[in-house]
Image (cartoon, rainbow, N blue to C red; front, side):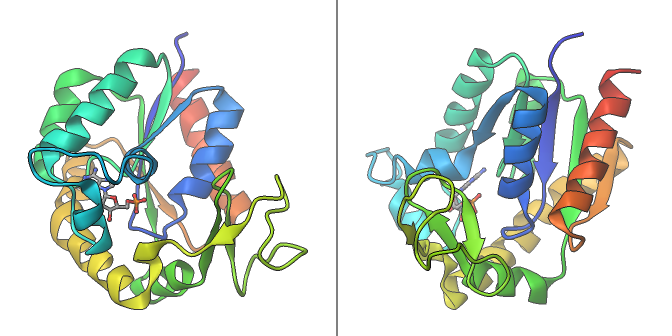
Length: 212
Ligand code: AMP
Protein backbone atom coordinates (compact mmCIF):
# COMPACT_ATOMS: atom_id res chain seq x y z
CA UNK A 1 0.00 0.00 0.00
CA UNK A 2 1.47 3.36 -0.97
CA UNK A 3 1.30 6.32 1.40
CA UNK A 4 -1.98 8.27 1.47
CA UNK A 5 -2.49 11.39 -0.65
CA UNK A 6 -4.85 13.62 1.30
CA UNK A 7 -6.42 16.95 0.43
CA UNK A 8 -7.74 19.04 3.33
CA UNK A 9 -10.24 21.78 2.44
CA UNK A 10 -11.69 24.48 4.66
CA UNK A 11 -11.79 28.26 5.07
CA UNK A 12 -8.91 30.20 6.64
CA UNK A 13 -9.16 29.43 10.37
CA UNK A 14 -11.01 26.13 9.93
CA UNK A 15 -8.18 24.21 11.64
CA UNK A 16 -6.39 22.79 8.59
CA UNK A 17 -2.92 23.54 9.99
CA UNK A 18 -3.60 21.88 13.35
CA UNK A 19 -5.09 18.79 11.75
CA UNK A 20 -2.39 18.67 9.10
CA UNK A 21 0.30 18.45 11.82
CA UNK A 22 -1.48 15.49 13.41
CA UNK A 23 -2.21 13.68 10.15
CA UNK A 24 1.30 14.07 8.76
CA UNK A 25 2.66 12.61 12.03
CA UNK A 26 0.13 9.78 12.12
CA UNK A 27 0.73 8.69 8.51
CA UNK A 28 4.34 9.82 8.17
CA UNK A 29 3.66 11.85 5.04
CA UNK A 30 4.79 15.25 3.70
CA UNK A 31 2.90 18.41 4.58
CA UNK A 32 2.45 20.57 1.48
CA UNK A 33 0.98 23.96 2.32
CA UNK A 34 1.03 26.85 -0.11
CA UNK A 35 0.46 29.43 2.67
CA UNK A 36 3.68 28.47 4.50
CA UNK A 37 5.63 28.16 1.23
CA UNK A 38 4.51 31.65 0.20
CA UNK A 39 5.20 33.15 3.65
CA UNK A 40 8.76 31.82 3.38
CA UNK A 41 9.11 33.46 -0.05
CA UNK A 42 7.09 36.64 0.40
CA UNK A 43 9.57 38.87 -1.38
CA UNK A 44 10.35 36.52 -4.26
CA UNK A 45 10.20 38.48 -7.53
CA UNK A 46 7.77 36.98 -10.04
CA UNK A 47 6.39 38.40 -13.26
CA UNK A 48 3.25 39.29 -11.27
CA UNK A 49 5.09 41.11 -8.45
CA UNK A 50 5.90 39.65 -5.03
CA UNK A 51 3.56 37.28 -3.09
CA UNK A 52 3.59 39.83 -0.22
CA UNK A 53 1.45 42.34 -2.16
CA UNK A 54 -1.34 39.81 -2.62
CA UNK A 55 -1.08 38.20 0.80
CA UNK A 56 -1.19 41.43 2.79
CA UNK A 57 -4.36 42.41 0.93
CA UNK A 58 -5.93 39.00 1.61
CA UNK A 59 -6.04 38.29 -2.15
CA UNK A 60 -4.98 35.12 -3.95
CA UNK A 61 -1.44 34.92 -5.29
CA UNK A 62 -1.59 34.30 -9.10
CA UNK A 63 -2.18 30.67 -10.11
CA UNK A 64 1.09 30.06 -12.03
CA UNK A 65 3.13 30.91 -8.91
CA UNK A 66 1.24 28.54 -6.60
CA UNK A 67 0.83 25.80 -9.23
CA UNK A 68 4.59 25.62 -9.64
CA UNK A 69 5.15 25.37 -5.86
CA UNK A 70 2.63 22.52 -5.56
CA UNK A 71 3.85 20.58 -8.59
CA UNK A 72 7.47 20.65 -7.37
CA UNK A 73 6.43 19.52 -3.86
CA UNK A 74 4.18 16.70 -5.12
CA UNK A 75 6.92 15.39 -7.41
CA UNK A 76 9.18 15.00 -4.37
CA UNK A 77 6.59 13.36 -2.10
CA UNK A 78 5.29 9.81 -1.91
CA UNK A 79 2.29 10.41 0.37
CA UNK A 80 1.25 13.94 1.25
CA UNK A 81 -1.25 16.14 3.01
CA UNK A 82 -2.09 19.15 0.89
CA UNK A 83 -3.67 22.20 2.50
CA UNK A 84 -4.36 25.74 1.27
CA UNK A 85 -4.55 24.53 -2.34
CA UNK A 86 -6.54 24.32 -4.62
CA UNK A 87 -8.30 27.61 -3.88
CA UNK A 88 -10.14 28.08 -7.19
CA UNK A 89 -11.44 25.95 -10.05
CA UNK A 90 -8.44 26.54 -12.26
CA UNK A 91 -6.14 25.20 -9.51
CA UNK A 92 -8.40 22.13 -9.21
CA UNK A 93 -7.88 21.41 -12.91
CA UNK A 94 -4.13 21.77 -12.53
CA UNK A 95 -4.01 19.49 -9.47
CA UNK A 96 -6.12 16.77 -11.06
CA UNK A 97 -3.74 16.71 -14.03
CA UNK A 98 -0.69 16.10 -11.85
CA UNK A 99 -1.92 13.64 -9.19
CA UNK A 100 -4.67 11.37 -7.89
CA UNK A 101 -6.06 11.84 -4.37
CA UNK A 102 -7.09 9.11 -1.93
CA UNK A 103 -9.08 11.33 0.46
CA UNK A 104 -10.62 14.81 0.13
CA UNK A 105 -11.88 16.12 3.47
CA UNK A 106 -13.68 19.37 4.22
CA UNK A 107 -13.72 21.08 7.64
CA UNK A 108 -16.89 23.10 8.03
CA UNK A 109 -16.83 26.11 10.42
CA UNK A 110 -19.22 29.10 10.69
CA UNK A 111 -18.06 32.57 9.64
CA UNK A 112 -18.29 34.11 13.13
CA UNK A 113 -16.18 31.29 14.56
CA UNK A 114 -13.61 31.73 11.75
CA UNK A 115 -13.19 35.45 12.51
CA UNK A 116 -12.85 34.72 16.23
CA UNK A 117 -10.20 32.06 15.58
CA UNK A 118 -8.21 34.10 13.04
CA UNK A 119 -8.07 37.38 14.96
CA UNK A 120 -7.08 35.58 18.20
CA UNK A 121 -4.50 33.34 16.55
CA UNK A 122 -0.84 33.62 17.52
CA UNK A 123 1.79 31.57 15.70
CA UNK A 124 5.25 30.40 16.75
CA UNK A 125 7.91 32.13 14.65
CA UNK A 126 10.15 29.03 14.91
CA UNK A 127 8.03 25.88 14.63
CA UNK A 128 4.76 27.32 13.27
CA UNK A 129 2.50 25.93 16.02
CA UNK A 130 -0.69 27.96 16.47
CA UNK A 131 -2.17 29.20 19.77
CA UNK A 132 -5.20 31.36 20.57
CA UNK A 133 -5.29 34.32 22.97
CA UNK A 134 -8.49 33.01 24.60
CA UNK A 135 -8.84 29.29 23.86
CA UNK A 136 -5.33 27.91 23.66
CA UNK A 137 -2.77 29.92 25.60
CA UNK A 138 0.80 28.78 26.21
CA UNK A 139 1.94 28.50 29.84
CA UNK A 140 4.13 31.57 29.42
CA UNK A 141 2.51 34.41 27.44
CA UNK A 142 4.13 34.92 24.04
CA UNK A 143 6.40 31.85 24.26
CA UNK A 144 5.88 28.57 22.38
CA UNK A 145 5.53 25.52 24.64
CA UNK A 146 6.99 23.20 22.01
CA UNK A 147 10.21 25.00 21.17
CA UNK A 148 10.48 28.24 23.20
CA UNK A 149 10.03 30.34 20.02
CA UNK A 150 8.42 33.76 20.08
CA UNK A 151 4.71 33.98 19.20
CA UNK A 152 3.52 36.59 16.69
CA UNK A 153 0.32 37.63 14.97
CA UNK A 154 0.31 37.03 11.21
CA UNK A 155 -0.01 40.26 9.16
CA UNK A 156 -3.15 38.90 7.52
CA UNK A 157 -4.87 37.88 10.80
CA UNK A 158 -6.08 41.43 11.52
CA UNK A 159 -9.87 41.71 11.48
CA UNK A 160 -10.04 43.64 8.20
CA UNK A 161 -7.79 41.25 6.26
CA UNK A 162 -9.34 38.18 7.88
CA UNK A 163 -12.78 39.31 6.65
CA UNK A 164 -11.39 39.91 3.16
CA UNK A 165 -9.78 36.46 3.13
CA UNK A 166 -13.09 34.86 4.05
CA UNK A 167 -14.87 36.79 1.28
CA UNK A 168 -12.19 35.72 -1.22
CA UNK A 169 -12.54 32.16 0.08
CA UNK A 170 -16.31 32.16 -0.37
CA UNK A 171 -16.10 33.51 -3.92
CA UNK A 172 -13.25 31.33 -5.17
CA UNK A 173 -13.07 28.21 -3.03
CA UNK A 174 -16.72 27.36 -2.44
CA UNK A 175 -16.86 26.05 -6.06
CA UNK A 176 -13.86 23.85 -5.23
CA UNK A 177 -15.76 22.23 -2.34
CA UNK A 178 -18.78 21.87 -4.62
CA UNK A 179 -16.61 20.18 -7.29
CA UNK A 180 -15.49 17.47 -4.88
CA UNK A 181 -19.00 17.13 -3.45
CA UNK A 182 -20.27 16.45 -6.96
CA UNK A 183 -17.56 13.95 -7.80
CA UNK A 184 -18.88 12.08 -4.77
CA UNK A 185 -15.80 11.54 -2.67
CA UNK A 186 -15.89 14.45 -0.23
CA UNK A 187 -15.67 13.65 3.49
CA UNK A 188 -17.50 16.47 5.32
CA UNK A 189 -16.53 17.06 8.95
CA UNK A 190 -17.88 19.45 11.59
CA UNK A 191 -14.79 21.59 12.24
CA UNK A 192 -16.29 23.22 15.35
CA UNK A 193 -15.79 20.07 17.40
CA UNK A 194 -12.78 19.72 19.71
CA UNK A 195 -9.55 19.22 17.70
CA UNK A 196 -9.23 15.65 19.02
CA UNK A 197 -12.71 14.72 17.72
CA UNK A 198 -12.00 16.29 14.33
CA UNK A 199 -8.75 14.32 14.15
CA UNK A 200 -10.50 11.02 14.99
CA UNK A 201 -12.97 11.53 12.14
CA UNK A 202 -10.24 12.47 9.71
CA UNK A 203 -8.05 9.53 10.65
CA UNK A 204 -10.96 7.12 10.34
CA UNK A 205 -11.74 8.48 6.87
CA UNK A 206 -8.13 8.01 5.74
CA UNK A 207 -7.93 4.50 7.25
CA UNK A 208 -11.17 3.49 5.56
CA UNK A 209 -10.07 4.72 2.15
CA UNK A 210 -6.50 3.47 2.20
CA UNK A 211 -6.69 0.11 3.99
CA UNK A 212 -9.86 -1.23 2.42
P1 AMP B 1 -3.10 30.52 4.24
O1 AMP B 1 -1.93 30.40 5.15
O2 AMP B 1 -3.48 29.23 3.57
O3 AMP B 1 -4.27 31.20 4.90
O4 AMP B 1 -2.64 31.49 3.04
C1 AMP B 1 -2.23 32.81 3.28
C2 AMP B 1 -2.25 33.60 1.97
O5 AMP B 1 -1.35 33.00 1.03
C3 AMP B 1 -3.59 33.63 1.26
O6 AMP B 1 -4.44 34.65 1.79
C4 AMP B 1 -3.15 33.94 -0.18
O7 AMP B 1 -2.75 35.29 -0.33
C5 AMP B 1 -1.90 33.09 -0.31
N1 AMP B 1 -2.20 31.72 -0.78
C6 AMP B 1 -2.06 30.55 -0.08
N2 AMP B 1 -2.44 29.49 -0.83
C7 AMP B 1 -2.84 30.00 -2.03
C8 AMP B 1 -3.37 29.42 -3.22
N3 AMP B 1 -3.59 28.09 -3.33
N4 AMP B 1 -3.67 30.24 -4.25
C9 AMP B 1 -3.45 31.56 -4.17
N5 AMP B 1 -2.99 32.19 -3.07
C10 AMP B 1 -2.67 31.42 -2.00
